[in-house]
Image (cartoon, rainbow, N blue to C red; front, top):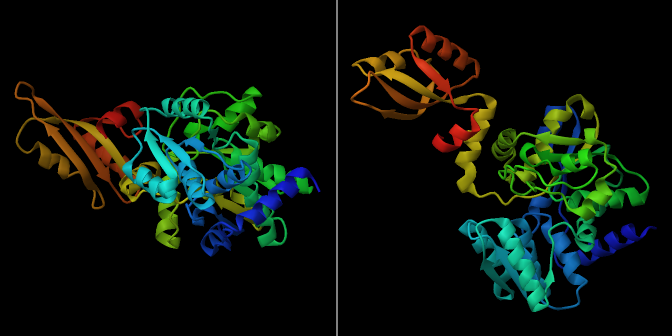
Length: 410
């Protein structure tokens, strides 16, 4: 038995003194939809609603005392805080000043009197630098969220549990990739056991750091980062995880659109009552791209987190509708004359609903500008609407897919 197998299995047994294993559940809805045998490894059901406490536990149990610190605005902070309280370790959690109050309060709740929270910097890089500087000065241990051998070993416990629960290996495992700790841990354990199922690694389109590293042959820093899928949007994959992942075939790395993930979040919430954060839904969303590849096969999707702030639900709905093509935004040039608005309203279809309307009247001009958002039942309705606008002589511009203008006015 290899070292990683023995170490991961020992860590998994030790975890049972602190928190129970997460369930591996067959999902009938997804199985019927994709004509496959779909199982969900529910990491969203840990005590902190993410897998992050596994790596934190394994790293902290090996320290043998002393203070710890981390820099995080999300699941890693909560995992470290929870472990500090349950292992009796003092910790300092550095979080950006811009971190939502709900996340700060939850981290404080998990850590209790064992954790001090320090809000430092508007950007994560500033927060990270402050945490590492403090560790050097205070003689504390910095806990990386993914670029650490003990953390990777701890995350491998997901694979240990999966194998024991299933009794046999699935045909395929689908899991998200952020910094790479979870994927490196699971892959290294499965490799060491001697049999590896097919693996698919899923990244958000705007944070595909593994795909970039595989293309370059080494970790690289992305020029731009879309942080919507905040649990997996990492600008640079960890060096240690990449050493394990560097042999992954590039075609096995899937990149999914952020707005499409929102459709999956809504579907699982509405049909199954499963609450997933964007990163937690990545593996399930990727099933759309796998299609015939998974038909009739047993597939495990790792749902990595359920720390969803319901204040984000309107944004999720908005993004889902825009991806589905059932909501658009237009800037409309409207004549400044009586009856012009009525003329426009008459061309709307029976399922067209005005969700936003802003009109700026300018007394010195013959035309005014309207920002209008329209929701409809089918994407085809917009082709009809646009033909009618053109026939009536309305000048318009579609802002829906313009990221710069959309960010400013939508």
